[in-house]
Length: 283
Ligand code: ATP
Image (cartoon, rainbow, N blue to C red; front, side, top):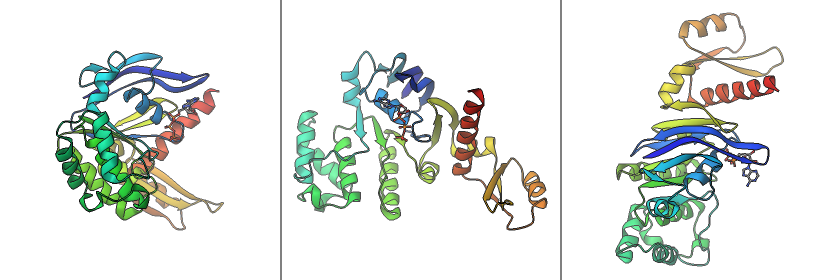
């Protein structure tokens, strides 16, 4: 559904995106992860036609993004990180204006559909500024879904939401997937990516350093972790490929040693840490 072919984008001397290539399949929830400044937002901006790459090509549903930005806008929905709803208008008025701008057919019944899908029917006439952060996020999602986009982009969808509301949002995103839509999200919550995403891509310094399902990445990088306190009292986590290797390391430590299964966060820390070390050594 999304094909990115060797795109690069620099801001002055900073290579925000550096020869990036990957594909996202139809109906997938794909998570783009990476430390601050890794190039996630720049990649999303390119895919949503907000900025052009310096080189490379990308396609959504076989439409060339650079050549046909207007066609692309018709098939994508975007939920930005910052809340750009009209705060003094009601939920319904926000949807109405957006739907009119996007020439949504049968707008009134479509608004009812998305309000019902997002569980917002009873908030239809509420002024946005009076809603909680979670309900405002749901309104942003409802708005993005109005024109029935094939691909939905979510930039840090659960930032600032409490754990209950975050889980509720995950259910909604799964529902969007079950309608056959493709979802690309960026997140700093690695647990969110592990729970929700079919596949993830990890970016570091504009490059893709890992791509796969959360289980594939754990298998590749290490399925076990030994945790212990070093002589300076710091907690150290060492990721290992096998239980045997983990036991060997644990045997050499005495205090507070623990062996556990790895999670995506362990993989993320290991890979992005190594990449930073490689870059520093190359300087
Ligand atoms: P974060 O997780 O902090 O949001 P990110 O992975 O989304 O980071 P980007 O925002 O894509 O990263 O930024 C990648 C690099 O490009 C950073 O070094 C950033 O400072 C730089 N950058 C991004 N946008 C601009 C811009 N408009 N002008 C100058 N530099 C920029």
